[in-house]
Length: 294
Image 1 (cartoon, rainbow, N blue to C red):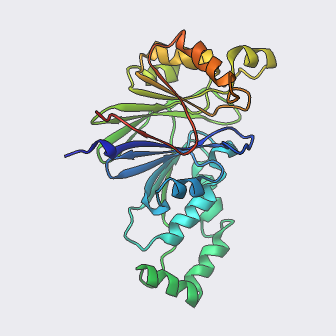
Image 2: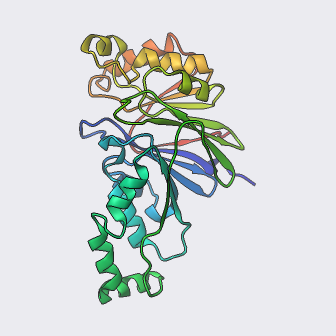
Image 3: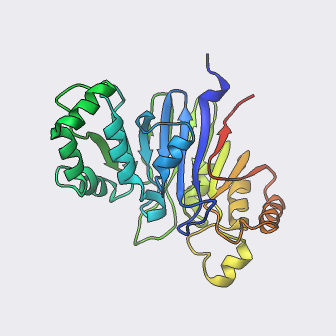
């Protein structure tokens, strides 16, 4: 029997590249029954993960939307922490994302990677071996093993009782490749648009989804005036994305300094509600949403 808490969305990072006391960077964890799936791994994700009551070794999958630092800078910390805390009983970590996901992973934690000196010392140093054994591990302590794959729009990834459909997004091309993801489960569907501007591929991906997690940098008129609207969604673009796709719930994240101010936030929600008739959730860091709960 499936309990309603078997499906959750943990909003670990709901901010931008600009650090603020309230939010910084992008990261989510999607709980699908017994699977924990991380989408992006921005600043302090590992710490926020633990503050949310989760543990690095629980996460079995990571999907990157793209490789701007506010979406991936905590990746080395997460990889090392997950490996260090592992006792060999966890599921192998699987990582997916646009190029250069494989190259980046190898350069961080591969045999000659930037952090290889760390894990090699922990494997060889007797006190670290004892810590590993005392946690429940066995010797010889294994090297990090990660199943990593570069993916592109049009591919699918099959989970245990869920499937991911991958779509091209429209963000910082041709300098970076960006992706959006749709997770279809037995109870419903959720789309992570990532950082994108209005994009036919993402609109098609989101059609009929239950939940649409959207980048919402600022008020549309502000973005148009400052020249920051390209490759990003503001209030009206996010609203039109959600309304055109007929999604039930719109979750606003990657929100900037201006739109998060008191009064400004309320204006943003009102402007979106004038276009989009579904439920609107203004994302906050450490927010936990029960999905498809009756």
